[in-house]
Amino acid sequence: MKRIAVMTSGGDAPGMNAAVRAVVRKGIFHGLEVYGIKRGYAGLISGEFERMELSSVADIIHRGGTILRTARCPEFKNPKVQQEAAELLKAKGIDGIIVIGGDGSFMGAKALSNLGIPTIGIPGTIDNDIPCTDYCIGFDTAVNTAIDAINKIRDTATSHERTFVVEVMGRDAGDIALAAGLAGGAESILIPEIETNLDVVIHRLLQGQKRGKLHSIIVVAEGVASGFEIGKIIEERTGFDTRVIVLGHIQRGGSPTSFDRILASRLAAKAVDLLMANEGGKMVGIVNNKIVATDIDEALKQKHTLDKEMYELAKVLSI
Ligand code: ADP
Image (cartoon, rainbow, N blue to C red; front, top):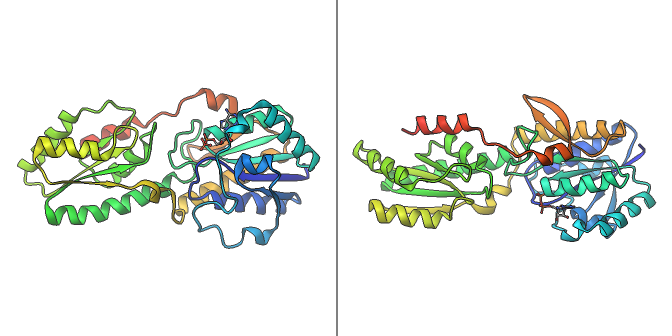
């Protein structure tokens, strides 16, 4: 293995830059040539390669987004396009690739590995919905952004004795809602993995009022329903002054937390080690604070599961 490449693909996540930096620096440390591929699989098929030096990744560890940019590229699902990409990589003498992204990006990585280009996936998605890893890069930062918003909302909620519904990201996975709801002290947390019972939510709000509670915060993952829908029902059924906040894309940006920077650095270092051992078709992850590698095939067969114990705890603590 002499020449490797790194790219970011799918939705961006804070900490992707820290991972790119670690791939480049660890690769160069071991005497490899490292290339950056711009705009994910779109840049791969159009040949947007750039030689990365130590200085190319200077001053990026603290930045959100990705200096390599990212893009969706549906054409890459086409086997003919994958074949052409593999040929282009071989022509450029690239011996292995590291793809930082979500499960869609991992499918592309698997296809390249099957075509003889060893490829390693690094989980980078704020949704935290990739199996075989406890955490994905960007999740911790997104949760902290949501908590920061909830803290601020709490101040005004108390002053005005209002109910706030905070909609966070998470179409299929409730990880952000659960973590932000637990850490932010939300009264109710609505997530796609658990059937929503608004009667229970409303009962809790009314009980809270009887006990003299000044404000309430309900965190809802976007995959459950729109925050506005939930807010409207709550206001109609309780008569409480209810406001809705959709956090949206601010959860995707911002400077990564120390947790995400360290996770990104550790996962990237393992990915380079695997390529140097000529291994491909794997994803790296963190399980019980150990960095591990799993076959992408195996990971894609599994389903990300929510921490049910944490959900039950959040319910108990918001009684
Ligand atoms: P994420 O990686 O965050 O899950 P996407 O699902 O949008 O994001 O996937 C990112 C990119 O990965 C897609 O634009 C496409 O280029 C590639 N990709 C997705 N699914 C496949 C697939 N089944 N086969 C090959 N490439 C894929």
